Image (cartoon, rainbow, N blue to C red):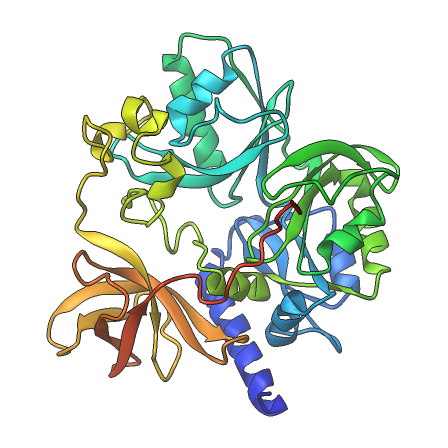
Length: 412
């Protein structure tokens, strides 16, 4: 156990680093989610993020980045996040799947009703415009995109729709629907209390979703997914019911309100990317170590291509094109390496890459980071040097996730 003064300092430093990373321009008009006043009542420290005003942490006995982070990993407990800044889209029309497969890299046609998957939206150069979770909702396709990129995503979709000869329409849910994430080992037990009697969570696989009622409220949706490496859910509800549903969840003493600071350190421990830091429009899925989203070597999407920018990612045979850089994990530093810290070879003479995300891992009690290095220097165990506050520190390329994932598996 870390001394309390050290835990508090690390928590403050993590929150400060997050605020610096995502501070909005002073003249930017920030949007408030339906839970804004609720966050304030709970002691939320509100910060600009993706054009919204959201809590970076909460003040109180169980508040602060460190405590909020560790709560989410603790057996029998779970964390509640406001992720209403994310963009929720419904796709309609008989050719909706064919269109979506023009703009993302994954196999959407194969999804059975209720099934979902992570995919990537690409540009004409094969760069990543955004990452997205896509679910076959039966009568429509349900898509969730990142809050900071959602308007750019939709502009891209509209441009591609003009080129598409088929029946497809895009319904952006705007802020009429809010989105909460409940994550952690106790998430299923907590969310079951607001689900209708008979809802079968035991057989609800990871990356599946369904329309449902929540606390008796119609027009809601639940998806078993998340951004922490733990079991968990994203639940969507009408804006006017967001506070009542959040309040109901927080009546359970195992549920803790959790801010963006802990969300960031949790996803980094899980080896998950933050768009804008670890992925961008100049990075391909192969460079980002996300080639698996296209499927295996003989999969339909790799053999057929057909999505925007495919020729920059795949050879005509469906193999991945060679790249000059790769996303990797990094450990061994004595101090946290933040974004843009330079990575050098073991001699410290040749710059080979750059850190994109870094923090102090509350679970491992040591600094962790991810970044990009030259191809050939990306193998696990490769010794490197990282310039942190103008001082060279030894580090090592490592595999991710840093903390083993605990995604739910349906019992056999």
